[in-house]
Every structure is written in structure tokens, then in C-alpha cells.
Length: 88
Figure 1 (tube, rainbow, N blue to C red):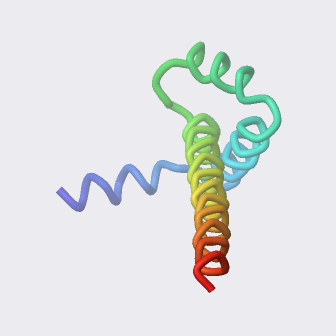
Figure 2 (cartoon, helix red, strand yellow):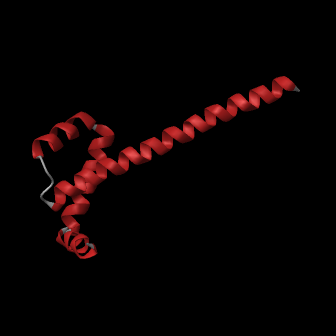
């Protein structure tokens, strides 16, 4: 089974994948609706560029979720700090 995964990874052309990744990341950040329409029209990922776009989109979404979680933690901690100040 590992052999199949390795072969699939070999099929990815790095420059095209990286260009697609960067394109997907930037579009996810600044034009998410356009990216969704584009990816849905493209269908199943066949090219390295298309695969890169999908991974770039996923990376942006992952980073956005981490940022949101960090913001929630800050808000929660501010509330905890205010509660501690009230108890004093």
C-alpha cells in the first residue's frame, strides 16, 4: 500500500504544485467564492497545479482556524482576568 502512495507523490510536479498551492492560498484569502467556483468547475484533481490549489486552500483554512482559536483564547482569558479582579 505504501508503494502506491509513493508513486502518486512522484507524479506531482513540484513547480506546478507550488504555483497551484500559492494560487489556492491567495485565492482562499482574498477571493474565496471565486476559488470555490473554479475548483468545482475543475472537478477531480488531475494536474499537479489543481492538487496544489486544493492544498493551498486547505492550508489557509487551517491557519485561519488556528488564528480564530487563539483569538477565542485571548477573549476567554480576558474574561477570566476580569473575574479575578472582581474577586479581589
